Image (cartoon, rainbow, N blue to C red; front, side, top):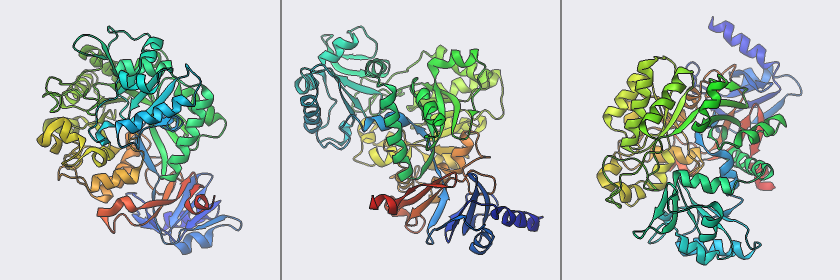
Length: 532
């Protein structure tokens, strides 16, 4: 039987339109774990084998790529993105690399000086945790920097933004608007959270052309980092952008769109259960926010924030509403992806999913908890029992972990040690997948962060970290038959690395991407990019 399969693969290679050889192919498949060459026809892998088998059987005129002995892995799948927003952020005032609040405000001021009076000035991705003596940007700060323009500056987490007086007036924010921070006298400070952030986003939403440009920039970045698929937690208008790109043949990555929870009624009316579309664009599950974020001090905690003793965070939805959304989704066969960061947020999300499954048991629901930053041992055990997927972000540990990181500031040293316990999740045999939340967007950085995490409860092997971005990631989106491994019948999505992450696990961050292949097409070639 094995002989028959082998011969079938070689015969298939004779029809290939592209062949990749002389590589160290790590398949992440259950059968053949490694190979030297890959043959692709019409975007699908038709054979995996030795150089001699694949090259000799390839037809004349077939495109042939010498991989130079480099490591090849399946295309990375980022399981948690805001893909179009990431691209658009690069079109606004990028505050991510600033070292002080004064430097960030100077960039906002410079942008205002070049813009017509009254035009919005948008800053993106500021993070006070990286600033010397960092604090949140206030209304007064932005009034001074942009006195003649409405201005908004979004924190990197997306859960907190700062606005100036002209923006407050333009949007119609008042002291009674939910999720608006006030001083002791009841005055608007200028920092807004959760639902109020959405008001700012809506007031400054760009047009289709700008979003298409943002998508193109995000795609270019994805290709350079080896990302071939994303699970996107989209804004309401983003599906139109993805559709326009897919119809015109310009959707360069494979996108699974999780629908915002406010659109659940529409999904139910249409009897849309998700997993609908094609291999380029698919409607996924329902994205539900349970709590906020640690950086914004809005994650729901059982004990207060260490650096804000009166604050235990917040819930985005009333618990009854959360229970109902999860139950309705489960009944309709819709996968839920529930954002839950704090231990109280995770308890709420987990309890809602458990109640929904008690009411209507489903064996292959693949419901997910997004982030899962502060789970207890009990939470992890219950996830294992119910088959709930842990969708986590190891790059957060790289950015904010360690003894001097933001996690210690927000949570104190003991809770920080329990944060993002990747090793404990795997030990409990919970299916774990990795994404970036675009903070920053880079699987290799995420792999490095998980492998070299500061605490034993976090550190995992290179093999497990890559699997979380490939094989396991495909499982989380019901696409294990299409992607996540390099084997016959799977989509021709794979990545050629510069360097060996296995050889020096402590320095995975130095590994790069030299080629990215989507559907058998080389969409990124580092050598060509350097020349251009």
